[in-house]
Length: 114
Image 1 (cartoon, rainbow, N blue to C red):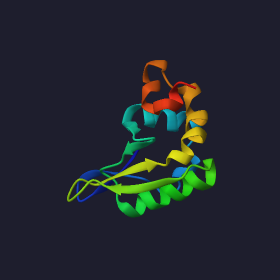
Image 2: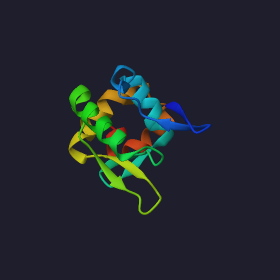
Image 3: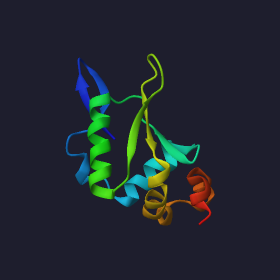
Image 4: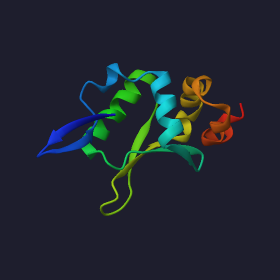
């Protein structure tokens, strides 16, 4: 992702212009690294990002790729994760699977088998 220097520390951020960098390949790489199956959907660990940044990212994923994503709290001081809904898994899987390593298809659950 991207970093911003704040008071001498570099903090991970999701920039407002993230849409121009999101492609099926970048989503596949991100999911292979930080994604996992969760129930009949999937999640992406985004624990270090602000909720406002994640809300923007959810809108972009919906508008650009028609993927419905919600934000789930990890609890106090544990940040947030993105949850890809069961209804969006066929779209998400079709979008990224061809860029994934076959050894990581299991992260897509049943959609990795199709």
